[in-house]
Length: 268
Image 1 (cartoon, rainbow, N blue to C red):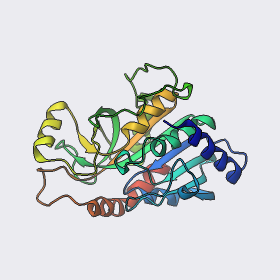
Image 2 (spheres, one colour; image 1 turned 135 degrees about the vertical axis):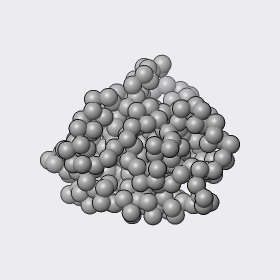
Image 3 (cartoon, helix red, strand yellow; image 1 turned 180 degrees about the vertical axis):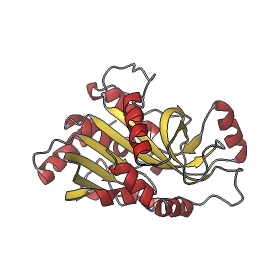
């Protein structure tokens, strides 16, 4: 991982935003654009201005870093994510976590849309990640080690904060928003899975499948940030529904669930 380009990009953020100390970060995945409506945005910076991020290549990922505020807390919102399958290395995936760690943030919220595998996870379900299975065959912590990521061999017994999930479930009940918990399985993409793969993933204990989130979670866990991850089940996984899979279905699911997403992000 090129830490020089990460450090250079952090300097650009600091020059553009001035003195800042985000308490938390939020990475918006596919279908989660509506979450922006609940924030007060102070300043924006295009990913294209940051060598470590660069322009996004996936529809629905705007590629803008926002200095924002919600409930009095300064938050860095990453409007769109970079993915491993885009083929330009780990720096764009790692930079949001690197930036938050260096600026003193304590919490990161990761969001995504995924395909439902469990019969308890129909389209439209909001799922808090309780654990993950990494089937990407790669790991962002491989290679030369840097102290930014803590110890070389990091424990992953509780990647997703039980405390944050407990508070989220309490808030969801008060807001009368249904919330499930489950295991997310990450594949490298950018192709969707085969029905045979989905059958195998179900036997492994996966409730949903997607192409992101796990690398950021591994990095954030190593860096000592508390992690909350939310998945919007946008469709049934391959072989479980009647229609072919399409990325536009993910975007439609996000628009359909926009009201729920906004309430969910803003609940105390």
